Image 1 (tube, rainbow, N blue to C red):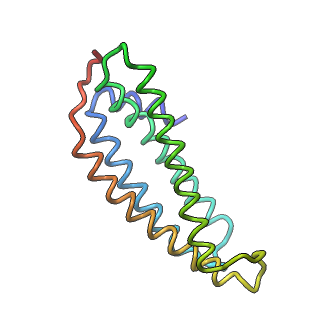
Image 2 (image 1 turned 180 degrees about the horizontal axis):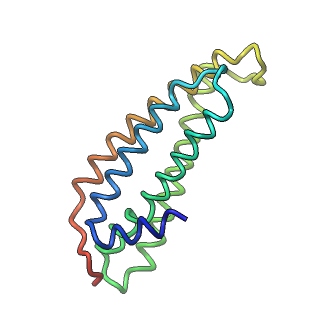
Length: 152
């Protein structure tokens, strides 16, 4: 529901600026998740996740617009495929990093209430690390080439 609005905005404002602002908001959301505890209400977590999902909806279209506007029409298929591949690769890599952090702090055990402190410590370090990655991504998004607002 949000992506079409963000897409229209990125047609009027340079997409890299819109995407960078949304990435900054995502950084804030990830930072907030770093402080979850076992005492947090389910509604608090749902609220933060809804905000992050909304922000992602705002980020995705401008980011794709910025990428596709830098590509000649004959390479749209390749660029779209690479964009999807990089998105999936990033998702898989984040899961690998998260599982490595869990393995370091929790080890090869079933997560029961005895292990909640280690579980939340793992979450804390995971979200802090991803907050740092996202913060760096803001600058990567800002320094990419200017997209033309009219496609090739």
